[in-house]
Length: 342
Image 1 (cartoon, rainbow, N blue to C red):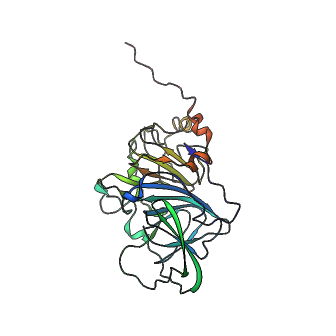
Image 2: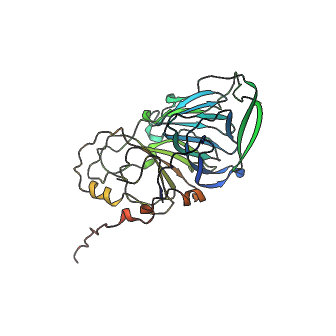
Image 3: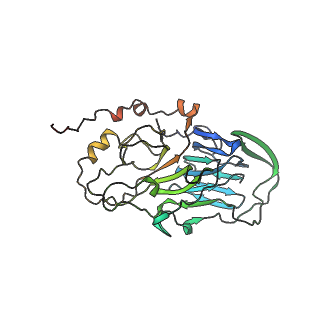
């Protein structure tokens, strides 16, 4: 299934009001599972804030810079960056006049962390030194009407208070939101032939209670040199035990020549066969395999999970790409196999 981008709202809509759950799995009350949201908004969260009691939120902007104020300070998160705001931390988001759109993955099981690098060694992929915490800030405002949104067991509650929640003037510990520039991801890739597993593109991961099994692997398909010889370079045709929700931050994804737009999404459920569309196959099956320089206009990503994603009413009713659902983009493949003569 594939979705077109959410349209920008035509009435004033803040980040919380523009947040729509598209799929998920598990139960927040059991601290096991995940939710995937798309958001589109056009107004600031003036005198209001949000916190989730359910899980950590990974926010991936596609359009529009997010100015986020948390209890720990402020951080700016433009398109091409990500940020993580942990369970229970209160925050408010301001957006530009042209609005903002993007993706969120909320995990109930654990916190996001760097994946183990194994034989890669001490550095590479997402390096620790490139993660940034908010700049210290506070405000001392009393005698106001301030609305607080609280997500609890997948329901949204509100309450009001007479002061800003961002009046924290000091803190101690390491439970803190952070942002990361995806342009700083140090790519590992094949320099001979064939594909390596997409786990080499994993930026951060949240594990389930079973070691090595992910509630969410956040994987990107970044600009990179393509040099593999004797290889069909786009992702190969496959099925696997993970559910794959893909999003597009900018440009064109190599396995989808059209239709997969920035701000849109696609879902390939576990054990559902999928791969490049017919148009992509036609190009890449005959292309001259010369080294190809990185195209910095392209950036896609994937929320990959061991869980089985279930669709919500939002995802089944809105912005469906019917050509994809009807599998029209995979029609017309010719059988190239010729059996050997006996």
